[in-house]
Length: 161
Image 1 (tube, one colour):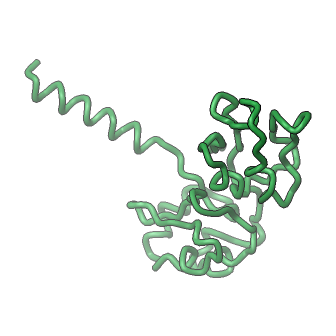
Image 2: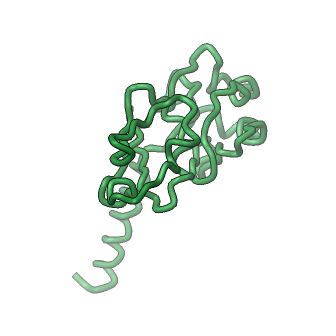
């Protein structure tokens, strides 16, 4: 195998891994396949009406959530704006993700007082043990507001099915 073939092979395997990466979808869908079948017909109204500006459009013309600057208020606007039935108010559910605190990066877990994640959490989903050691409780709606507020990027999101 020549060097060019090797690098080409490595690049194609990386591209396959990127394609398999699941996108974080808005919380109003019932059928994931509708994103690929219907969203290409649309002019991304869901993204333009999002009051938090967290709905972005991927290269394949499908919407996904980006919590780097804000979180989801579950306001229903994206579902109301969707003309092709991909997002529907009657399919409203929580964002399909788990919020995880990386204890090795978290300031509070390193005994530095920090409540950056707790302050924006309207659902009281972050508990602190003795003013340190934050953990996510079962009240979490995966809204994502805590993610952008963490000064050390210690809060991660894991897309679930």
